[in-house]
Length: 67
Length: 167
Figure 1 (cartoon, each protein chain N blue to C red):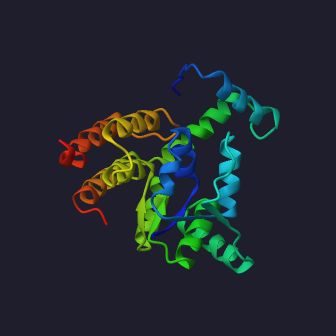
Figure 2: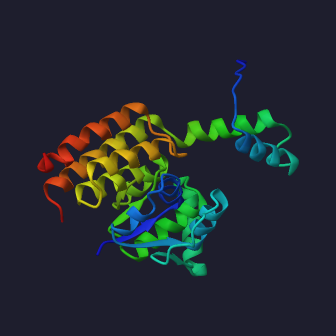
């Protein structure tokens, strides 16, 4: 298993700590693991890029022919 | 005016980018109460909830329908309620920044856009000048919405086309 070391802003660290204190997760690394899994599942990079490009093209068309 | 139903993402991200007001230009906006709660949980708004962002409480029958969408489509609760509301209101647009939801909703035949699209749409319709659009894109890039640096570069390049008539 690979180990990553990251710096986290204080406010985010406090929110992570809240999850542990509330007993939802047993440790801070578990929160981060769950968050990263969710990110990978939800943020399908290929889809996000495709949809963002669709929005860019949409705006360019709207500029040519504002409705 | 267009009827638009929104899930939590664009409200959160545009608020973080200090661009929430841009949603107002696009049409009549509606969101289900569950999405409203998701927004309240995600961010602390330093402003009063805008009256033009209309919160709709779904009936129990509609909530059941949302539960079915949630089970069938792998979408979250607020997104499922937004889908039900969008179909009920025959929405012109559905706004989301979630790729999985956008794919699912577009398969249902709804026109879907995201926060980036809303900023660029406002530029295309003259509600933002080029400098304001660039500043809005910079702020969106620092919001909790993740888009690649390549996409932001393409969006900035697109401003040449969008503002071509001004040159």
